[in-house]
Image 1 (cartoon, chains in turn red, blue):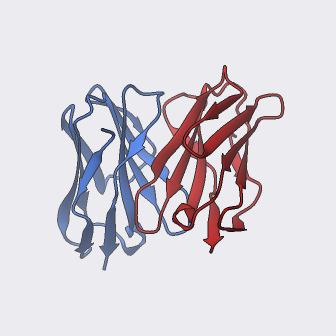
Image 2 (spheres, one colour):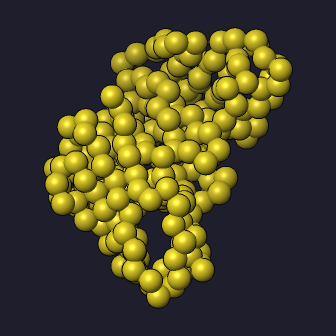
Amino acid sequence: GESVGLHLPTLSVQEGDNSIINCAYSNSASDYFIWYKQESGKGPQFIIDIRSNMDKRQGQRVTVLLNKTVKHLSLQIAATQPGDSAVYFCAVPHEAGTALIFGKGTTLSVSS
Amino acid sequence: DTEVTQTPKHLVMGMTNKKSLKCEQHMGHRAMYWYKQKAKKPPELMFVYSYEKLSINESVPSRFSPECPNSSLLNLHLHALQPEDSALYLCASSRQDQETQYFGPGTRLLVL
């Protein structure tokens, strides 16, 4: 069946460092990909998405890279801040198109 | 404005109670979703409404009953729940199905 996996369940960085969170997916027909940030006790917050016809998309301090050849997605956070501490999920549409399949999540801890 | 609101924020109920969770969005989105999230796990899809019609029911037990009174509102009626149903219940919406979903803050449900 379809799957979305993350390479690391936890990531610890120092304030000011750049963070990279990785995700692998199995459905090569996926049309778009999304990164969410979830802080403790809150709902997932949309960070950035990317469509399958793009390789890179930049937002404010975040960049998403998509490598369709190896079915790999990454989220880069520049100059990581303590407020970036959260669980980060990648999400990919189900083969049927409507549902999202979430990765297991990477917990990012930022120390100052 | 990408706001999805949910009420109540917290809910404690007994196994014989009937309660309802409410979700509202005013972004003109035509697809709305219910997800269930257990601690330290990713969200799992329960139901999808597209244009106020139920389009996906992910084999959810009948003690959960969704309702979409209009394009802005989504309810989840709860009856005879079990302690294992305790979780964070998340509502999301998207402009159309198969597009990026935006989540509400969730309702933290505890079944005693």
